[in-house]
Image 1 (cartoon, helix red, strand yellow):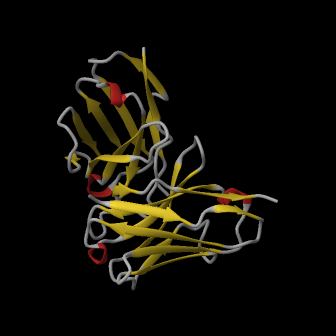
Image 2 (cartoon, one colour):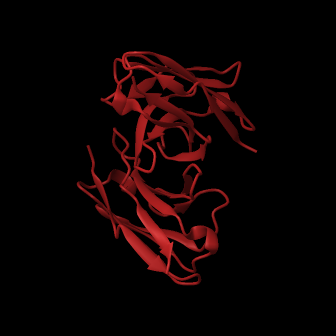
Length: 108
Length: 120
């Protein structure tokens, strides 16, 4: 199975800062089928990006995804209060569809 | 508005069974592939199973294959997960999730989850 490793484990930033989160795969992800989710405390995850760079319905343009092959990035251009949360990447190319271990974005 | 509402979780002894249900509303349920994803509290996410829109095709994670069965009733807009031979490591919050589209395997709508605890 494809193992996804996210870095950093935790990042401390201030509202208005730019956040850059990384997701590295143990093997090439076909067609760049890589998704990103945000999970706020006590809530279910919410899809932000799929297919590496496609924003999901209703997701603001401060969220952008990039990358290919084995290295992918989620960028949040200006952090809003609700963006201080957990973020997971997920590959949706190959069964079993696996998730990374998560990156926590916390308030500095 | 898309709504997914899980039910059926609870405390069960090792070796026992549970049947989870997910009531869907706000979208044409019969047109969408559906999945179950689980999360150990305060830990990571794991995809469990999927079913295609017509209910004729299913896939399972290796760790649940032969023990769990996914099914759906499109007339009642309901998704099910029958869980047998439960083990302690099946303890998790189980989410009912909707596929972005047929076979994208990314998940654009999630329920609030139902907690399954397997313990003696």
